[in-house]
Every structure is written in structure tokens, then in C-alpha cells.
Length: 614
Image: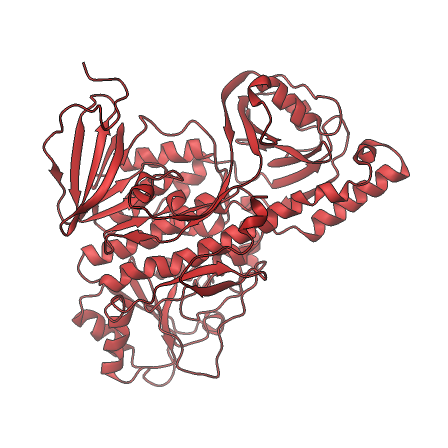
């Protein structure tokens, strides 16, 4: 009989190696990033095989917000409506409360984020390019992941195999060999594939097996998480309906509760020092302790404890996103890990999956070149560094409570001048530092810098100044193109093609768009040409007459005209990765004290990483 949990050494005799067709991508890890990568590949007609070590999807809520940029990606894939149907209803606002305990009638302060319905009204009214097309959506990862798995199971281009734990990834000539052990049979199977993507989480076997180092490490302290059912809304929502409540406790930020579905499912986080004995704390006690804040324990009727675990966040970025001469890639938590503040972690993975997915598909389908794959690391890695830095910025807002509560935290619940003054001080602090889940510049204002984006040839025009708090609309090459509603009420994004799109705002003279279209046809690059006459608002926001859009909605090139067929060919060669790749400079990205991504040489350094590990 095969061992129930065989290691590689104990595994029974290996089966015959399974060689995948050259047009099939092997994905290690069937969590949300791996499932979405397979979905993106299938969207572009490319097959994939997913190997997932677990027997089913996660029971844990994990992430609880799909941000606006991620929702734009799901809209492109035709999945936005299905995701929203399973999430929190669209009329419920996303209120974040700061409380000293539910025994008090009023919270200290709150951040109000509009409901999806309210956000849509803002987007429709403020048609100036500064807003996303899609609002965010609250949805628990346990629901999100199960739904995405169902979608993958129904897709004939996706082969999803649960219960296969990958142990070894190594070179096999020009291909990659992946060795996995089936947890049911104990049999070892070798898979041979042209391309492999590690979406296997923070302890990635793909990354560690290939010796790719991480820069960063775990943060001090950990959290005890209790996921539970309760319909005791009168007591839970005593200070108002909420998405999150952060609780002041023991002279600092002591815990939080998350409303997962606005019905009966909740998750409590009890923040503990590293030397705490979490096993001595019952699940019920953890819930009551967090909800009590600075006061006595606050009991609610718990109907069921669903799951319980501990969690110690890591803050890290992989030193490389690829290996084995561009045959193996990392995406999601295998490439970067983040603390939860800001909600950047899984949303970063979603963007990784789409970026790598369309680029791999273009190469496999024949019109993309190696430079496209090289651009994945050049573009996505600095964005990971940016999100890591700003999740720390958001975390520091909560971390500042310790100093704000001095000299006497206990007065916070007193109905006295001292208590009122302390509560007002905390209120001001949170209102002055309200960027968490609000900073659109982090979510969609980043600028991809790689050779597949062609800079303006007009030296008098400068790239938009980046700011964390706002998305500044621009069509500067490398940035996300601005959303705008056209005269007929349709969003310009809905006119994009599946692959590349040439947007033309025509003028009285010939702009030479035919040269771009002819070059695309000659190079067999799929291109949709969209002509938009009379669109004064959109034309003003989009800045140029001709804008070439990548499959991910970022700008590849722009100009007011192109009259030279040879220039058009050079443009098409560059955007599909023909002219770059082989001479790629080995660089890495760090985060400066100002939060702006900076280029460094030799080693990847997050300058403030040490602060998180003290």
C-alpha cells in the first residue's frame, strides 16, 4: 500500500514522464493566481495544466477585496458580473471603523468608502479620466477561489489536477522538468514542459528549488485568526454597519474584525507578540477579547467556529521573476509577499497573472517574441516594490497608535476631558492618513518601463508626475490608458480588441494610421483599429491622435501621426518584443524614502525593510 503522505524519497515507482505539447503551459499552484493565469491563457486560446498540492480550494477567507484595477481585468475577461454576483451586495458601503471596544456606544472615528452603486455614480458623473471603469468588490477569497475553480473546470483548455505536490523543478534540455507526487497514490510523475509558472505561494517550491532568493522576511508578531458564524448583528454592529473594525487594545492596535458577507460570516484577527502562547487562547476568548478593545471582553453569540489558524506576514520580493533562460516564471506570492494593509497582495497577483498571461500567449501564438517575456520582470517587479512600501505606509498609520495613546491609554474610554481629547487626537490622525484602500495611484497609476513601450520622441513633453493618492490620466507610453465614457455612453475600454488596439482620434489630415495597420498585418500581429470622430472629451484626455494599446490596457506607443512605413514597422517590432531581450541590463528595483521606485544595480534592496523586521 502506498504511504498516505509520501515524500519524494518515499514515493512509489515513477510513472512514465508526461510531455506536454509545446503550446501548453504548466502552472504550479491552483490558488487564485494560478487559476486566473490559466483563465487568461485560455482567453487567448492557449492550453494549460495546473498542478495543485491540495485536494480542494481554500477554506480561509484570506483576501476580502478585489480592487478596481483587478475588476477592470475581470471585465476584460468577461468575469466581472459573475464575481459581483457572489460578493457583497452592491448597495452596501465599505465602512472602516476605529474603535476602543464595542461596549461603548460610539466608535472613535471611521473611514467611509462608497458602495459599488455609489462608486458607479461617481464614475459616470466625473467623466474626466481620473476614475476606474469598474468599482472595487468585496468578496471572500474562499468564495472567489471556489468560483474561479468552477470556471476553470468547465474550460476545455484547462487541465486542473488537484492532489499533486510539486517537489522538483529543473532544466531538461531546452524544456523544464517538473516532478510531482500524487497525494492519493504516492506515485511520482515527471512532467516535461516548454514553459512553467510558479504560482505556488510564499513557500514556493519553484522559487526555492531553483535557488532564487527573496529580499525581506517576516514582520514582528503574528495574528491569531478565527473565522466564525454569528447572526448576532445587534451586538456586532452596535457602532454601525462595517466592513472592518480596528480595535485599540493594550496601548496599541490590538486586533480587527472583518465582515465577510454582511450576513453571518466574520473573521477576527488578534494581534500577538512572537512569544505569545496562542494555544492557550480559545477561539471564543479571542473573539471576545478583540471586540472588547480597551474595555472588558465583549461577548456575542457564536453559532459556529469555521476555522482557526495563526498567520505571520512576510514582506519580501523575489530577486528574480524568471529562471532557466526565460522558461520558468514566478507570479503572485511566490514572487512577492505583503502585509494585508492596503489589500495589495492578491490584487498584485491578479495583475501578474494577466501581464504574464497575455505575453506568454502572444509568444506561443507566434506573434510575440522573447522580449515580451523579458519585459514581465522589468514591468511587474518594481510595482511589487512600490506596493510593499506603501502597505508599510498604511500599516504605520495603525502602528502610530502606541505613541498617540501616551501617556495613559486607559483614559480613552473615560467620559472626561482627557478621554475626549485623546479620542479627538486619534480621529484627526486617521482622517489625515486615510489612503488605505483609497490610493488609486498605487492601484493603477504605476508606469511600466521596458523596451516594449516606446517613449515620446517630443523632448518637450514629460511623463506624468506620479502620486500615491491619485490616478493622473495620461497616455504616456507604459501607463494604464484612462477610462472615459464616449458620446454614446459606452466606455472606451469596451471598444478595445482582445489583443492590440489602435485608437485614432481623426483630424482633417491623414494621420498615417494605415501604416500601423499594414505593419501589424505584415507581422501577423492581431490589431483592432478603432476610429473615434467627434469625441472631443476623450480626445482631450487621451492627449494624442494615435494611441497604440497593449492587450492589458496599457499604452505601448502614441503620436499625432506616422507618415513613414519603416517607422511603423519598427514600432510593431518593438511592442511585440523583437528588438529587446538579448541585451537586457541586469537591474533591480528598490524603494526610496519618498516611496518612488528607483533603479539600482546588482542587488535588490528595500531600504525600509529592516523597519518592518525590528
